[in-house]
Image (tube, rainbow, N blue to C red; front, top):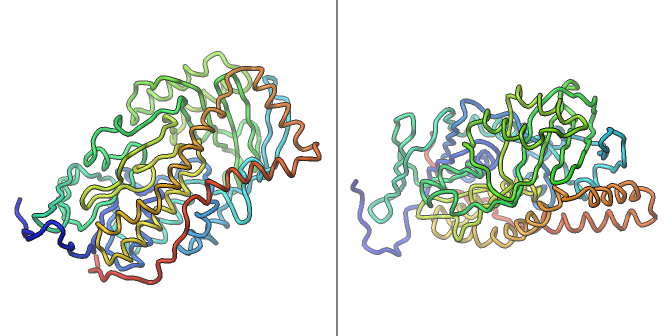
Length: 428
């Protein structure tokens, strides 16, 4: 492959104008929205045949609240809030042990809110669909960064098409295809935190309304919740179980994953047998390792990673969505501030994000262990604390301490003002 040769390796590259983003969940469309405002021409490729509407509830708090305000989507997020009232813990017989309000469950403060992942993806997609090119049902098969030989990245798609873009962004999650193509196999960067999580939509067997019910067993945790805006007939079921060793399975084989989940909870009581039976019929079944992605760098040449693809903090952190939104804001802002010079922008993006990401990953390590309590004695102690908390005169102080720890990681990445810098881009 030939291109225009450079006379010096340190020559400033031509300003980037066209960007391909792999992944249309949250990070990808958020970046697309912001890049379009700065004048870039953006294409988003997504393996799924259409926008994925499923998923679990995700927190928007701390820095991410201000980011969403600046993106202009905050009012829509509030309108689609899960509006949860609280949650309860039940014993093996289904008897309520204790109840807590939603703000203590989520460690929220100020304007913090919560939304279903599918609703957030829809909001971002609707804001970008007229200005951004979306390629559903396709994926990147190969990347050829022209480097010093020319400007851009030649992209081969699984559909057989080949196109050239100035930059490529991998916003394709924990199992990032972009990361694999550019940096190597996932096992080099993934660190298993000793547990697995599964979430799916099922009949609302517990008759919940804006409420979450938890049931803990040694090394396992089950929660069922129904949020505002969801059908009264359905609920989300969430299963977590400890597994020090990684399981062997294809992350695209949902049938095999459903069997693994059923085996992990075989013989357990409460409502678990019926909930597991429902998983067999779930169309939005999700199953994955609670894991971190740890990389020395998030970019190579004209390719950069964003969100979970770069630095997954796992569901244990509660900050994956917030960091995806914040990362999109920072990456877009730095590209605009650098007038499309990707080398300057990518270095600044990582410099701004990495300290906060690492703080959130350490938080995830700690919380992952607390999700699956190891013995009935420890579960009983936790239930005692849940039952006691609403009655103790120190409840506000305890709640404040919980919020402060969560808010510390939620505000770990500062929000810069990138102004109105633009890079003129051709229309699609």
